Length: 465
Image (cartoon, rainbow, N blue to C red):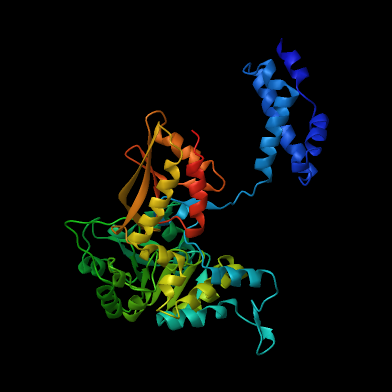
């Protein structure tokens, strides 16, 4: 059969639409979506015919109809869907970072379904400020004079630099010129802000004298940046925030600290490495500090700005503040998350991110053993499963040298690659995202939530590769 004959044999749009519409599964599908899906399938089919890689069996009505239905199911499925995190990275940026607590979800739902006092002062009956919803809470929890919030920490750093140092020099250690996921680079943010970056020190060693020697009449800010997702070890030297503040006071230059992840609780009480909390940072007298809302805080994406009232007030008035402002749903989530921190005794239990960090090895092992037992019911000779002790990571740029002991399920096959295994689990609904180490496919049970265990169990029990 020649190419023109093949083209003529391709089913027509109208006929396929009638067939699909008659199927009860697709009767609720909008006509526009169904037609567009059919057209896309047929266009791909025509292209294949013209390229000579389609045969008569590829253009039968039943075969094309099957493809259309498969594609229509995909088209009707939400693009943003639940994913089961079995990677072992708690604050996984690609998987949405922090999981929100039921209390937070309830507050978001209530606010989303009703009108609210977002920018309305109920006491005066006049226009209010949206940030007054969270500012008192942030100040109470951190000890800050004033606070505000924008869409993320990159935005917080940008608007702070624009407000405090546009057209001026900003001195920063070369060892703190970080780049994190999504191409956030301190030099780029600095350039965009209108400030002129002055690098001091070397990659591994920066001294106080390096900062002092770089100060000129054009210096507008001393900047300290959390190294986020990497650490320099060995022959190193760095300047503490207290030392930098002393230098700033001597020369009447403000000091800003980008904390990156930021944390309101001291994780060392749980046996982890100590890292300055937001409260400890502000206690030094730093002029401005910024941190993320969706990392160690365990809330929604936001960039929180805290510090001296004079600087925060100027940031609030900056024209960019409106462009970077957060909406009512983010404010609702942030407020509800912050309220969980008002009770230090229950915060590790209530905030999912902290709960996963604190999760006991016994609990993780119980989860892993349950899943292993389920899988072994399959009796698949070509697939081998083992319970292995590994390490999880906090993620999100927090405590890059800190690992957390965990139990993983190792799945190996002599016939199937670890990549194929990964593909199988990602093809599940909801998708299950594990990790590959040394050609082993691993499901890390630290980050599998309690209500997800049965889903993973079902995927393992019905494994077909």
